[in-house]
Image 1 (cartoon, helix red, strand yellow):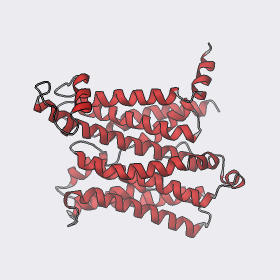
Image 2 (cartoon, rainbow, N blue to C red; image 1 turned 90 degrees about the horizontal axis):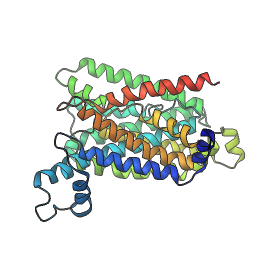
Image 3 (cartoon, rainbow, N blue to C red; image 1 turned 30 degrees about the vertical axis):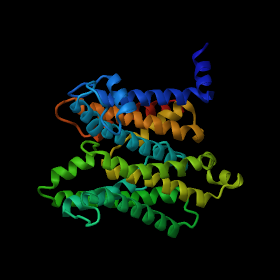
Length: 351
C-alpha cells in the first residue's frame, strides 16, 4: 500500500486516531508518575490507581513513602499538566478555526496577558483576598482574563457591530501590547518579588497540589463542552463568515460562544500554571496536518495530544537538570519554536 493511501486511510478512519491519542496519553500519564528521583514501577502505579486512590491499600505491598509520592506529589502534578494541555490545545484549535489563521493561538485576544497582569499584581503588591487566602493569585488571574475578554469584545463591537475577525485580531493585538507593557513596568519596579514574578511568567505546574486540579476542572469542563457543542459552527466559520451565514449559522452569537469558551480555558490554564507558550499553536497545527480540519475530530484530538505533550514537557523540565527544575514554558518554547518554524517553512514552500 502506498504512503499516500495509508495517509488517506488514517485521515478517514474514525476510531484509529482516537485510540492512538488515548494510548499516548495513558503512556504519558504513567511515565510522568513513574519517572523521577525515586522511580516507581508501572505495576505499583496501576495498583494504587485501582485500589488505593482514595486511601492507602492495606498490606505491605506499597510503602507509605511510595504511596505519598504517587498520590500527593506526582499524580496531581501530572493531572494538572494534562488539564492545562487540554485547555490550551483545544482553545488554540478553536481560535485557529474561528480566525481562519494557523498562526492564531490562545493568546491572540490578549487573554493570557490579562491573566498574567492579574497574577503579577498579586505578586507585586502582595494582594490577598480575605475569602480566598492563598488562592488569591489564580482567582485574580481568572478575573483579569475574563475582564480582558469582555473589554476586547466590547471594543470590537463599538468598532464593528458584526465583530468581524479582522476587528477581533487587531483589538486583541492592541490589548496584548498594552498589557505586556503593564507587566514590563511592574517587573521594572519590583524588588525582591522580581524572581517570583519572572518564574511564574515562564510557567510551571510544580508544587500546585490537588487544590489547583480541583480549581481548573470546572472551567476545563465548561470550556470544552462549549467548544465541542459548537464544532459544527466552527466547520462552517472556517470557510468564511459569508458561507456560514448562507448555511444558517448565527455568526455573531456563535463567535461569542466560541470566544468565551476558548478564553475561559486559556484564562483558567494561565491562572494555575502561568504562561506556557506554543501548546495552543503547534499541537492543533500538527493534529490538523495528521487527521484533517474537521472540528468534530480536530478539537478532541488536539485536546488529547495537548495533554500528552504538556505531561511529557513537564517530565523533561524536572529531569533534564535534576534535582533542579526548568520552567515548563522554557521546554515548550524550545520544542515548539523549531517544530513550528519547520512546519511553517514547508507549508510556504509548497505554495
